[in-house]
Image (tube, rainbow, N blue to C red; front, side):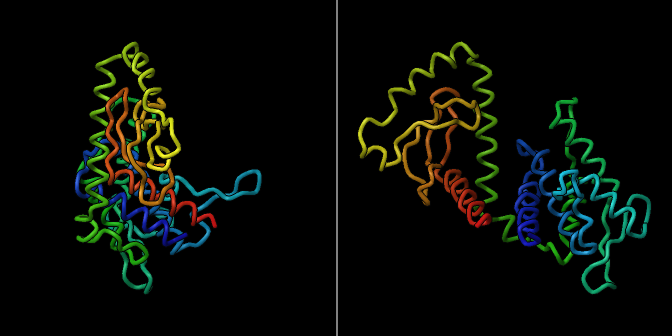
Length: 253
């Protein structure tokens, strides 16, 4: 679990390191921060990263709660900054609790439609500083330059473009275009084997994404284009979706 948390922190933090204004930055930030803090808290104070629910199950604490653990457990270096112990017990990393807490306030505004919120560079810097802890060490130059990060950013901008296009054409035109999807449904078994099908679009939510091929794992995330909002799922985006699907499936084995 610790390895998975560190990996997820690294993947998300690397995206923000390259482009902190990428569409969906608030959700990416929350995901990176929660996983990074959970890994650090579990490493230093095992068990305090989760809380017991009424039914007896344990649930991972929210990022704000994990920051509270660090605030209560660690010495203050200067206002808003806590010194978190590392593996050897002597070296410590500085965690800017104040900046991270402020960032959470901004992301929650965006994610819960409570007005405009904005992630700033200093918030991302505080997030990246967590990587100095030995249980993380995930945001390398190699990762920042990785194809995965580039593809993630490209796909998020493509989704934003498609959403803007959907807003322009309106619901009446969108509903009219749904009928076009019927013409793209496979009528022969050979077409199914080639990946030709119509599936749900992640942007408009309609079953109008005309798939034009098979992903590398054959799990149903082929590249294609939405007949309503024009979202284009590239082969790279399809590969990443399929890979995440496979990793999640094997993680449950």
